[in-house]
Image: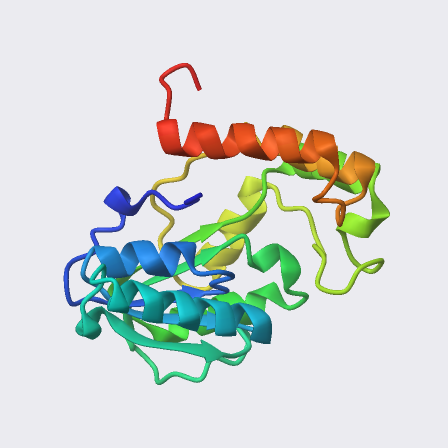
Length: 216
């Protein structure tokens, strides 16, 4: 499930690409498939380990070339372990809503982005997120460690990116079918992935992602 429209990134083979808050690596893998030199960063040790293993498996299977995989590192988005003006493109997907000091994180993205580079950032939409917060305290901070700490309006995110010195280009909304999935998760308990209704809806989402029917 990609939340970034890669065709809008102007990503070229050989570009240095940072997936900041990579999670389990979906955007990092896509960038590598397109020939970018990829660095994936996450704060969670488990996800760093998983992403490293997946990159290794993709290389062994011949899906990736060695030069597209630069590294997977554990790090803090508010204190990135990279030099100034390092990356041609930075993606941070569904990350900023977890970070208390989001301005510092955005400033760090700008610092390590090369002049003329591209930053693509996504956050949950305001209305679906309000419902999630209302349905379950287990979904957000301070009730759960690592949960969402704020609900963004689009204007707030654009203002923070502009304040950091970048020009805001295209915006879009996506994945409307995922909102009911999270409403359902919040109703039964965000940790209850084994719930029958959650499992059924997840299979539907997987079918939709793979099949991409015109109706959805």
